[in-house]
Length: 220
Image (cartoon, rainbow, N blue to C red; front, side):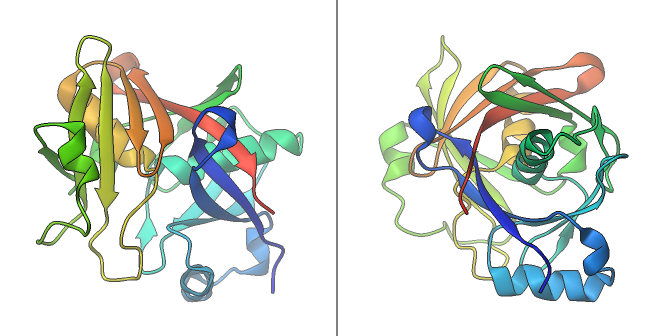
């Protein structure tokens, strides 16, 4: 078994909640893609990230059932993790492309593009209470991000995320890729409360990009 670390990404104030992430710091110990997929399924986190080269920022991301070209919470989490080890590059390199990363106070940030997360469905609900009242994923197929305004003027929204892949992840506690897609669709910065109380901050970046940031804490 390779060395594995677990962090929580997009934590709320004080480090509460957040989405667990598995990190394999030496991806070379699991070089085969099918073995990586099997390990991600065995760990059971919404995503597991393999660091192939910390110096160049080369990383590989898997859910329990699929490989992802881009995902927000693994990239924010692995950026924070590599920074603590003193080896974080300025650019991460998932399959989708170059992802700048940096820190601002207690938040770790990355920069991505909505088109790197195709197929994400957005569904607006009439109120935060309606979002919170969901007891199971709405019927249908495909990644669904439900949301409602908490404070439109302040850019505060309430969200929940449902992968609907049939791989055991019924609800994603906090997801940066969906936050990027929602921010691009609304065309404004957002302060997102997702799941049980995780927090995701976003803002518009240059050339059609979106910045997404959050707190990370060690969970192992």
